[in-house]
Structures are given as C-alpha cells and as structure tokens.
Length: 514
Image 1 (cartoon, rainbow, N blue to C red):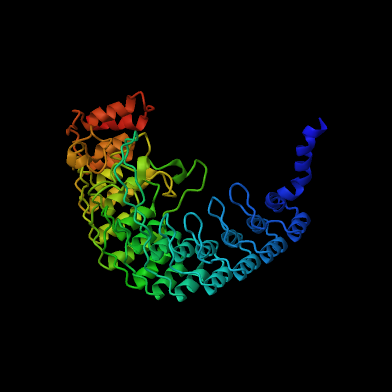
Image 2 (cartoon, rainbow, N blue to C red):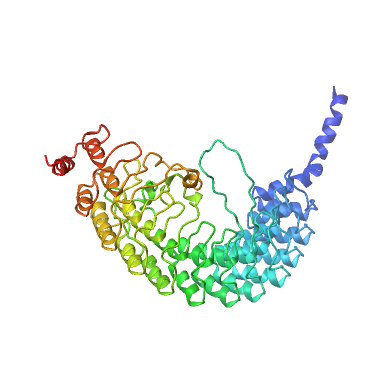
C-alpha cells in the first residue's frame, strides 16, 4: 500500500515547483500583490499564460498594479503578448488611460502599432478615449497615424472626431493624419428575409468631416477644414457634410460649412437637399406615425420646432437653393414610423405642410415654392395639411408643434396655401401603380380620387372642412371606392371606430341644408 502511494507522494512534493508557472497569472488576477512579487522574485515563469492566452502582465495592467507590471517587465515579460481576444498589455493600458503603465510598456519595447483582433491600434484607442498625452506618447514611440482597423477601415482621426476629442484631433492633423480618408464602403448584397419592409443598411464610407457633422463637433469641423478637408465630399449615398450636419441638428456646423463655401445645391441619392432636410428636421417627429418617444406625452412640455432649422432655411433660400426640389425615393431608414407621403416627388413645402409648420410653409411660399407641386401619388401640400394619408388616428402636427391644437395650425397652413393659389379640389391620382409604389408600398391604395376635404373629415376637423368648403371644395366628387365627401362625413359622424361628433353632425346638416 505504501509502495503504491509513493508516486503520488513524489508528485505532491514536486507540485509547488511544477505549478509555479501556471499559478503566477492566477496570483496577479486575484490581486495577491505580495505573493505575485514573491513568485516573480523566486523565478516564476513571467510569460506563463492562462488557457485563453492572458498573461500575468496583462492581468497586472488590467488591475493597474504598477509594481507587479514593472517587476514582470524587469524579468523579461513579453510586452506584446496578446490573449485569444487580441488584447495586448499596451492596448489595455491605453484603454484604461494610465500614462505610467503605457510609459513602462513602451520603454520595455511594446509595439505601438500592434492592434487587437480588429486591428484597432493603441493610438486609435487613445483617440477614442480622448487622451492627448497618450496619443503624444504613442506617436513619439512610432505609432502610425493613418493605420486603419480592419472592421470598418476607420483611422485614429475618425475615432477622435467621433468622440469629439478636439485636442487629439488637432494633434493628429498636425501629425499629417489624412483629413479626407474614407472608411470602408459596405457593399450590401440583396437578402431575402421574412421582414416585408425595406431594410436600411448603412453604406459606411464616412470621412473625418462627416464624422464631425454626425457627432456635432463644431471645433472638430473647424480644424478639419483648416487642415484642408474636402468640404463637399459626400457619403457613398451622396450625403454631403452640410446635409449630414442638418440631419443631425447641427445648425452651427451647417452655418460654418456655408461660411467656408459648402455647396448648398447638392441632392443626395434620395433627392434630399439641404433645404429639404431643414424643413424635415425642424419638426422631426411631428409627421403622422412617428414613434411615441418623438412626440410629447400627455402633460409633458411640448417639443418646440427647431428655430435653427428655420433660420438655416432662410439662408439657403437666399443662396438660391431650389424650393421645388423633389425626392427621388423614400429613405428606408425612416422605417415603419415614416409617413406614406414622404415618398417620390415630396417637396420641402409638402414636408412642411405635413407637419403643419406654418412658419416654414410661409417662408417657402414667399420664396417661390409651388403650392400645388404633388408627390408621385398626386398628394399636394394642401392635402397633406388637411390630413390626407393619416392612419391609425394619429393627427397631423401631433406633439412638437407647441402652443395650440393641431387643427389651429392646420387652419393657418391651409389659409396660406389657399392664398398662394392652391387647388382645393386637386385629387389623389395614383396610389397603386408600379410607379406609385416603387419607392414605398403605400397604405393609401383605396384613396384615389380623394381631395383635401376627405383628409379633414378623416381627422374630425370640422373647422378645416368648413374652410375648404367655403373656398370651393366640391361635395360631389367620388373616390376609388365610390364614396363622396358626404359619405365620409356620415361614416365619421356615426362610425363604430369614431365617437359621435356633434360638430360633425351639424356640419353635415348645414351642407345638405337640413
């Protein structure tokens, strides 16, 4: 029995020596500072790693244990040893933002250009966290300022701009970072899914200036322009820095770009111009069908229209931007909450009328916007303001237009359009042909032949309906379902899905002389 146990006893006696190499990473990981230093001093293997490749040095950096890290490096620990996730001691030290650790690693010969598995270099990480001292240390040690990570092809300058790290942006530009570098362009193939709606996939391909306009970093944009960035270089989808700034509520940046000579006349792939975006962003979330978080909750302070967008629109019109440009296609990223009317042929005026934005409508009309310019379905600004296309009982102008009920705003906008000569009896011409639905399948397939009056009835707006009738709206027209406005009135007044409306009943009686 004793003889058979001898090998076990020998192994047990040797185990402290045999396991020292594998225990050192555990000691450091557990924060056993004194024990780790003792093991290092006793000759433990300083390059031993855990099964995932994490070394004692990487654990020391992670725990910000300067003394243990210094002892490991002094004993020859590999400063570039990465674990299976691609994390190196230097990348970890930079991500933590510890200048002392970074200095120790660089002094020990750590490669300043060794990235992680995505090839994000330490300099990119320093740019992302906005550390100028670390960026300076890395560049001094030989970090390449124009390296790209492999996932999106982004450079350190792009990371710095995206995080609005102005000091790092300035430093990198002075270190000859490419101010016009373009990130990877995504060539998405066609995919068949169970999702029936169009699915938007970002095209990528942003430049540092496009990152600045997206993140809203005014000073970053200023530095990039000073460094020679192309002021009009667009995304692969034609979105210029000016348009991108407006689309992200960056009106100060948009003003800077115009001051520096940005072209305000360019349209993107969808046909949006800077002016269209100003009209769109002024009341983004007002359009019917917007998500609840974009609308004012009951009892909450109403969202205010963007005054910066109106002022920018004034400037764009003064520069001669066409007020009658029209969309080529509905932009799919607006998703299920977008309105059917924001499709091919939609103009800035129609977009403003849709949200019953009286100030924007007035501005556009005074600067040559055509009051009857329709979208591909034949929907005019007057129809949009009157409620044509409303679905699920969500009304025009809900929420962000502050200070009055939506019908008041609609009355004001409709009055402006009628004064400008809008046709009160214009009809929806096409909601079902291939031309009409190629950009976006519409929920309005049964509304051909309808006029603005149908929209007012659908919204339960008796005052708007009366205004339209008083200005010549016909009562004998029929839509594609054979219904007249009076039929719609009767259905609205007594329909099962709508509470009885005494004002609507009175309107019916007055119109039929009863």
